[in-house]
Image (cartoon, rainbow, N blue to C red; front, side):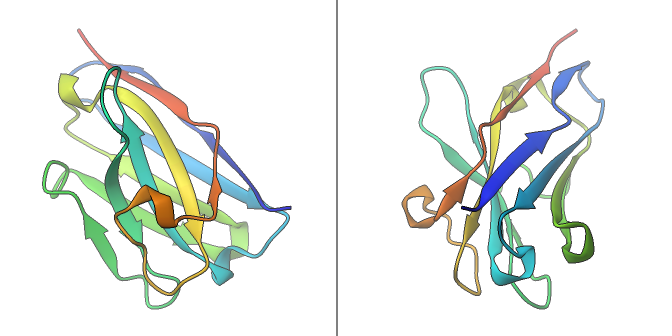
Length: 124
C-alpha cells in the first residue's frame, strides 16, 4: 500500500519561508505525478502546485506563482514544496498527493493517494 507522509510545517512570520517534504513508501515515486493541495478552515481543498511524472514540468496556482516551487527527488522518494514570501492567507493544512498519470490534475478527486497533512501557520 502506497503511503505519503508530509513534514516541515510550522509557524512562520509573514515574509518567511518553509520547505515541506512528502516521502513516499510502499511504491515508487517515479510512477506518479505529484500534487500539493491546501485547505484552510471553512474552505474547500485547493490545488497549489503539481509536477509531472517525467520531465519535471511544473504547474502552480496563480496565488502562489513566483513564491512557491515544487520539486521531486525520485532517488529519495520525496517531493518538496519550497514556500517563500509567505503571507497570512497561506495559512492552511497542506497535503501532498500522488496520481498514476503523467500529469498532475488540479482536481483533488483524481488523485490516488494522499498524505495526512501538515499545518502551516503564517502569523506575526
